[in-house]
Length: 105
Image 1 (cartoon, rainbow, N blue to C red):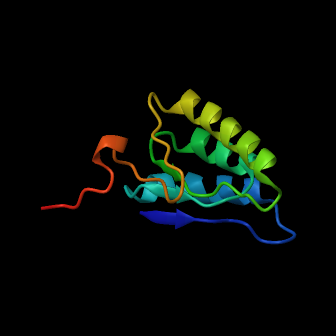
Image 2 (cartoon, rainbow, N blue to C red):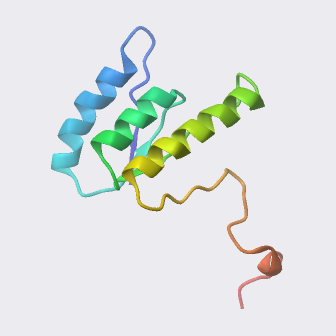
């Protein structure tokens, strides 16, 4: 997996992401971890590389309300380009509740 972050103070993160992804999607078969706290950057990455992206960042620095709105926006965008996006919150146990606490034998 290739972790892609184009955030840099004073630069246009959307433009930088576009320029990088246009090259990356033709040069690698690796899945792309889109690392941005900006919803418009994540949305543009999903448009340019549908089915190849994993979304890495949802930022809680500006409060939970804004983070939830951002998350809803990202999920809505993801559904436009992915038939069935898989979303997991950081620290969330992916196992069904009935299986939590079990250990592998």
